Structures are given as structure tokens and as C-alpha cells.
Length: 448
Ligand code: GCO
Image 1: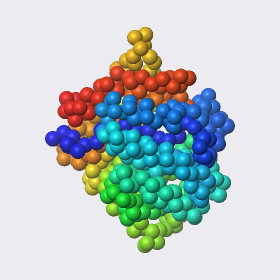
Image 2 (image 1 turned 90 degrees about the vertical axis):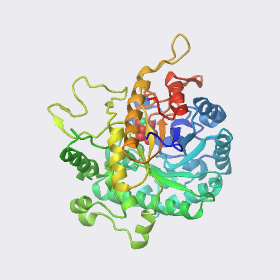
Image 3 (image 1 turned 180 degrees about the vertical axis):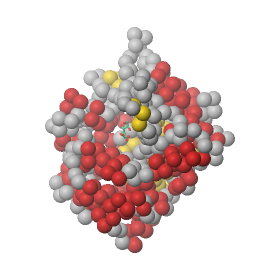
Image 4 (image 1 turned 135 degrees about the horizontal axis):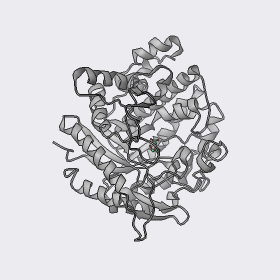
């Protein structure tokens, strides 16, 4: 069966990680701009003030996508480039940048997929309490309206939120992402509630107001557990673990976010664990939250740990193959996750991110020979295709990332790109994996 004829092959990035130009042309500051270098939580205190300087290399970067043969590009919009204070005054130069990007993509036959929010929260709104503020979903709606009104005449694919798990879990529970805070369960449930409602209001607005018929989703992480074997009992055990809200770690779970959005209810387990601490949606709000979506976006890099084995676990064992960032190689997750998500949420699955970090450099011959990344992608995409062969509807695959960029708390130490970026000179070099991916696209993944 393989990937269908309309399967979208592309690459993905996010505004803060690539754009730079953090204070140019009227852009307002976000929480990463303000805290990255002062938090003490980022490798070498690095920030993305310049990053890949994509703001000034936009056309060159679209040309690279074209060279790689990508049919789609997932990128995020910087909220404060559009609304410098988060609400109120609109920055026309910010809109122009994204409008030009969309035009450039379309002129090169590349489908734009917009992520509205990939973690770069407006600093002015943060000062007003951010997601804790009961108005926060209205702020998000105001921002959504400006973007959708400006770009939906040319854009069909909309992803409301990237990985709300990390937004909440890393930003406000663990405190290792901006704004580097640590909150109690009560606060986390309030913020989660407002984030889910923000998604709902945005999805409803897009559905009813986009000028082109819209395809909408969000892009949660997909920490799926892999069955120990293929017996029905083992599969059921993995399924249960995959969708568990996981008590104190509920903000990193799948079901805490996806059940309200795709099934119109909170998971029973969450209510059993937290009862009245879980803020309630009105009936009207539930309708917005569960606005029917078109696909299920998911970012997947490795499986969920499901069993401790002494010092180790089923996914981390002595000498286990790991990528440079320390994530284990678990290609089977690309089969099981789409299968489980399709069963539960009933929508075509789009891999909105997948890829690997490795130690890359430009070799003496001027090329980047990243054979490990080719092997990683080969193993993962092959498993993804197996899900299609098994009847799971798949919508696309967005490789993370188009180019090396700022990897949050790891600063620039992790290279995820199909394109190498030499930061001091901003010179780009397509890696061997970029050319390999080009062939995969040309053959629609049939030769893997
Ligand atoms: C995430 C984000 C990306 C990361 C990528 C590699 O998944 O954390 O969506 O911004 O850069 O996933 O960690």
C-alpha cells in the first residue's frame, strides 16, 4: 500500500529557533528573547537573537527546500512579530514577512503548513500572568484572527499549538524552558485548561473564517509505548500506558490534551486523580475545544519508557544506540504510535516532526557526510510506512529540521538539520541526508 499519492513530504522549523532579527522591524519581545541568556538553564547561555538569520535569508532557505525536493514546509509564526505586545497594535512588517514567505513557497510549488504557536510567548502578556490569566484564550484568538485574515487566502494547513506538553511541562513544571518556572498542580491544570481553550477558539475561528478550506490539527508530542511482543495482551498493555495521564506527569501525556480536543472529554483517569481541581469547560466551550479537526499531528523521536530493568529500562539499556542528544533509537514507535492514535482519534496521522541530532561538520571535501542520520531516517520512515501498509491513514511526514538551529536548552550544541548551518558565516550546506531525503520524496518512499 505504502504512502498515498497525496502524501506530503516536507521539513519543519520554528520561528524562535531559526529567524533571528529578534528586535527588528517592529518585533516585540517574547519570553525566550528575554530569559534565554539570563536563566542559567541554557547551554553556554546561548540565545537565538541571530540563530540562522532566516529573517534575512528567507529566499535562500526556500531555494534549499526546493533543491531537497520538499513538497511542504511546516513553519511557525512569531506572535510578537505580528502583535508586538501580544494584543493590540498590529505590526504590518511582521505580516509582510510571512506573507512574502508564503508567496515564495507557493511560487516554488511548496505547500505552507502554519504553526500558530511554537513556544515564543509574548513577554507583555507574560507580565499579565500569561496562561494563568482567564483572558489568555481571548488573547490567543485575537492573534489567530490577524494571522488567519492575512494568510488564509493562500494557506490551507493550520496547526494551532506545537507540543503543549513541553509548553506546560518544560516551561512551568520542570522549569527548563522559558519562562523557567515551577508551578503546583493546581496552576498547571489552570494553564492547561486555558491552552486547550486557546486551541479550541483558534480552531473554530479558522474553520469558520479561513478563505481557503482549512485542514486543521495541533502537534502534540507522541510518547507512545512499544508492546513487548505482538500478543493481544502485550499490545493492550502498551496501548494503556500510551494513553495513561500518568498522574503527576499529566502535562506530558497524550490523552490529557488529545482527548478533550478529539473526543470532547477529559480522560476519566485525570478526573479520578484530581477531581474538582480540574477546571470545568462550559458546554459552549466544550464545543469550541472539540471543533472537528482534519488530521492528527504528532512529533515523534523515541518511545516512552515502559519498564525498568535494574539501572536501565526497556528503551535505555547498557550501550543502547543513542542520538547525540541522548535519545534512544526506537524506530518501531513510528509504527505503533500512528496505529494507536488512529484507532483512538480516528484521523489521518501526520508526522509533524521526526529527525535526529548528530555531530555534523563540513568534511575536507566540503560536504557533510551524515550517514547516521540517513540510517536513522531510513529505519524510522520504513516503520511509518508499515503503519500505512497496515491500514492506518497517513497524511504526511515533516522532517525535523530543514536546517540546524537553536535547540532550546541545548543551545546550538545539537544539529538536527538536513542542511548544515555554519553560524558565524551563515553559510548553508545540504548534508548527504538532504540528498538522500530528496530521493525518498521522488520515489514516494517506495524504495526504503
Ligand atoms: C520539540 C520541538 C522542536 C525541537 C525538536 C527537537 O519537539 O521539542 O517541536 O522545536 O527542536 O523537537 O528537539
